[in-house]
Image (cartoon, rainbow, N blue to C red; front, top):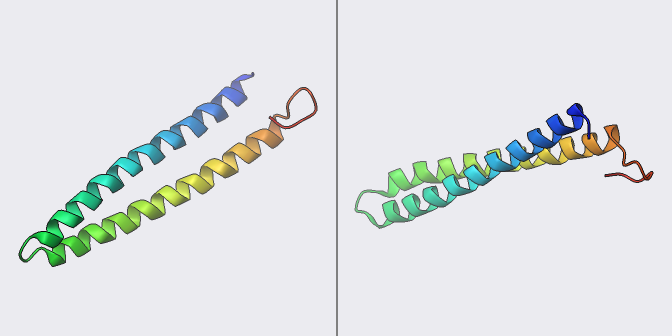
Length: 86
């Protein structure tokens, strides 16, 4: 594996880590939203939490697309030595 392959692999790993962190954030936001829905006067705040959840979902999905594209580009740029794609 050459340096460019390592860089691409590291980048893909970092994208996956970011996606994991967003998943944790989404979980916390869901708990917060559900708690706010139960609080008197918390409906408006729960709507703000819903917006944050929507944005986290969008960010997660975009990172997933970027990760898939990077993996495809890496596979194309560095074909496996046996003639197949890595």
